[in-house]
Amino acid sequence: MKLPHLSLACALALTSTSNAAHFDAVLTASASGVTRKAGMDETPPAGGLNKRPVLQARAGEPIRIEFMMTNVYTHDAFIDSGVRYYIVKEREAGQKPVPPREGAPVEGSFNFALKPQAKIAVRTRVAISEPGIYLLRVESFNTQRDHEHFSAIDIDVR
Image (cartoon, rainbow, N blue to C red; front, side):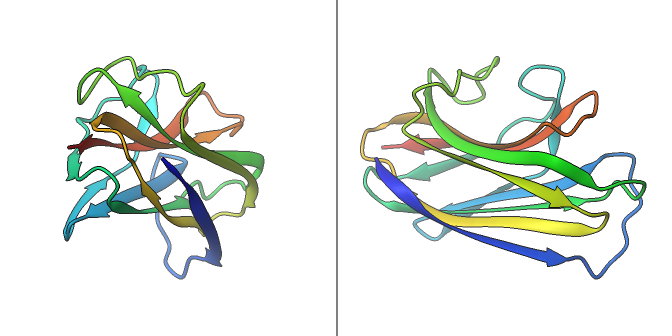
């Protein structure tokens, strides 16, 4: 796999959102003119509640990945929290529990301080050279809450 070139964009949100969740997260992956989108999910339970969309891609083809997370928790900022993203091979699409990220051929993370209504975004491209089923996952960590948020898409590389 080629390692991704990562670009980050942070901006203040211009709209107000009232939601019981801490984050609104959207993950998008595109290949061969097809796009799959996954909304926010949370753990527990392990692996989340939502069924993951599946994107088909050809081995070695560039896959465009975009992720945006908004702090919709209007009462407080998230300080010293973070986001990690990774792609890891799995046995089958929708596998639960999700495979461990240790040894993931593509991964990255960063810390942030995110005020209420602020957004953080990731945009990158990766290429997966070996056919198989892969999990693309972006997740929060160290939010000092009772659960974490994530978005996930399965990628079927042929």
